[in-house]
Length: 507
Image 1 (cartoon, rainbow, N blue to C red):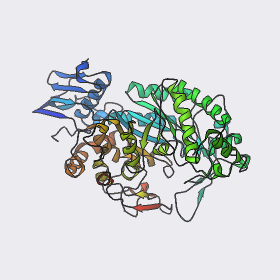
Image 2: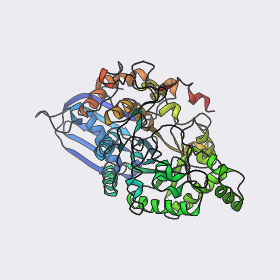
Image 3: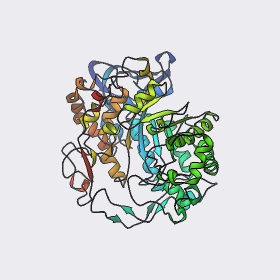
Image 4: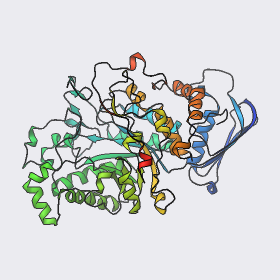
């Protein structure tokens, strides 16, 4: 990539070899023939012209113009009276994927509203257009539901928090919690929309629902366990409790989703659907009776029945359900899309069956996973995903490439779970610079993984993009490793080592 140092890399870049001051004169217009989110940008001594295929394309062109002006253009205020210097030339650009997402888990550790708004700005600067907000889980419920106030009065707070993973098991004894009011979330949605970013909410069911059951014990399998004795979970990992498969629970969550749809205009609504333990259903007379009444063969089909219910419910209201790839178990709901997180296999199966798929395999783009095998990495967890590993991530597996099913992969997403990410600075450290590599994969039409020019990407990071992150105040992981204040000595982790390259396996 020439001296423009663009991230994500554009489709076509032609520089004249000249550069000069930017006068601030920018002309913009829309030409639908370019296609959604596409743009052209021309810079010269007379200023800049941006032509977008739509308003989003104009906006992405403005982000590129900002990059051309140098790192100081990413500060919140001008620090020099002199005009920016920029290279002159023409850029033609169009994104590879329509869904270029980042999942932020605010359920395990709550992030204040201003931190979420800041992440919207960071996504916009990297031309990512979906913010997936994980709002509910076993450890906390983060969205105000007015008809069910105990979801936040009780479910938004836990009395302590496990520190790290592994042994010895220790706790931060301070209570932790927080939630967003409905107007907070409307503000986030509106702020994101101004930057052409869609906010997709996730409300987990039927698993990952411990906080909701702690707030309303009747939601759980009370014929098997004492649900009234449950408190918001203070552990990490695989929770044994699930929602009861009753009409009352379905009615309760329909009320929840009524309010969710009023806040979030996104076409897709994420319902989780992952890691649902079935032991309570196997022991529950109520669950077993429901299975007999419905003619279901096993508990996987019972989970599918609940997912299908909300697929129909959302479809009737003009929305679409998306869930983690476990929603394939027991039969996939007709209109559902799949977020594939376990290798590539569920995504390939769903795509070949005609369903839309967002690829986000944990073995490739889970940003809570450790960035190196350096013993100073804070709370090392999961597989090692280096910056280069993320840059060589390929969302389209070989089995789908070149087939009609390839178009069913509507996009890709990087995920940040926050069990061991307790603050904004920790979120920055885990997310950056790897999100810059992911953004280039999601936007740019790169070669296959083994043929990608990582040295060029690394050069662009060193020559320009780290300085942009510095200007935006991002506490990223330096290339040399964690700084002393970024380390967390004594907090145990849980490492999986380094996975085999999953892209080559997905054929």
